[in-house]
Image 1 (cartoon, rainbow, N blue to C red):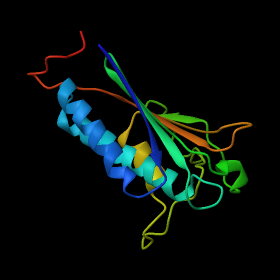
Image 2: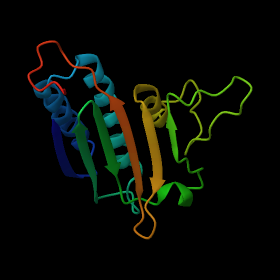
Image 3: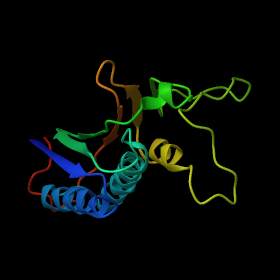
Image 4: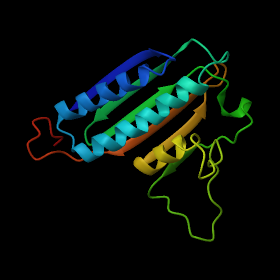
Length: 167
């Protein structure tokens, strides 16, 4: 089974719940386990919120794109914006991370496109939440076009009563 959808959304806060609801509805219809659906919906909400806040060159207007793919037992979500990108924001670019890439305690922590927020801050944890809730994450600047693509994958679990369960 494969399901694919894509949305072009305005960079407005009201667009974030729309993307989240569409994802949750798709997952419910497909028969994905609710816990997996919830994790993906939180990760998507964080990625969309980042696109709304940071995804334009003028700080106002514009749009961003959300694309979701369910292929077999995997869901991949990509959120693409047209902002300045990580490199132009003076932040570190990070290619990818998977849960299976566990690092020894003595190894340096991987670098994120942003530093973790202080404990009392209201913002600055979105990318860390995405990494915690998914299995594989990629951040990349869009060369020549501007913007960032945040892409993440999660292995799906299916409800027992799922009619569309991957075989």
